[in-house]
Amino acid sequence: MKIKHISTLSALLLFVAACAPATPIEPTPDVNAVRTSAAYTVVAELTLTAALFTPTALPPTETFTPEPPTETPTEAFTTDPTQVALGTPVALCDNYSFDPATVDVTIPDGTPMTANQEFVKTWKIKNTGNCTWGEGYSLVYAYGERMGGDPVKLSAAILPGQEVEVSVNFKAPGKIGEYTSAWQMSNANGITFGKAVFVKIIVQ
Image (cartoon, rainbow, N blue to C red; front, side):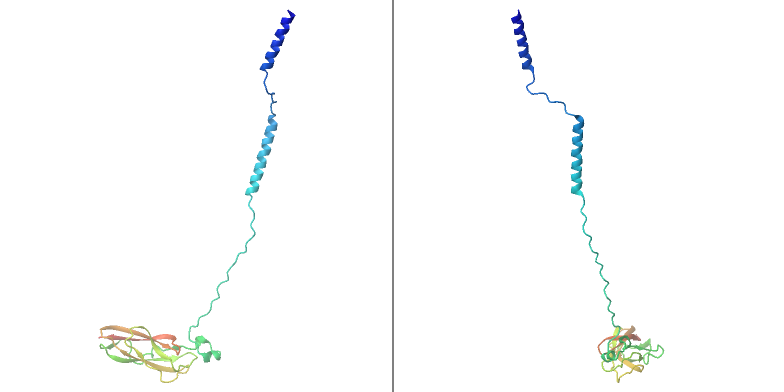
């Protein structure tokens, strides 16, 4: 009877041993420790990301401000080398004026003409510049109807302050109408100056 009891006990122990798990059971992890570790990992990743995206300050650049261009004054009138050597202001070298009441010596404005009629228009002007009008100075066409105008050369030198009569040979157009021609003084360099004078005719 005792032997049978021992055999039963042995069989029970063998059965328990066979049902036991093959690997040892791991202990349950500490939840607080896991949370702390995860928190440290997130902080480390944020720090690394911030370091990568932190802008690097660029060195200051100098701002270049261009200087305004220097304006070169232009000469309104011609330059006479003699007057420049004497220190005479260029703007006062060549100029003239006229009296509206006496400027038209011949052919007043509105004078009637026949078709193709030839005539001479003469104006009286005054040299108001500081340069003497000599060879090369002439009255030249400015604008309007030229009417075949041919300027007459100056017969003598015109001193500053002196009055002179200047003339142009014209030929009236062949068609009926009113015609105006404007002329202006020119110096030896071909540069015009002063206010233009006019001739106005009516072809009938």
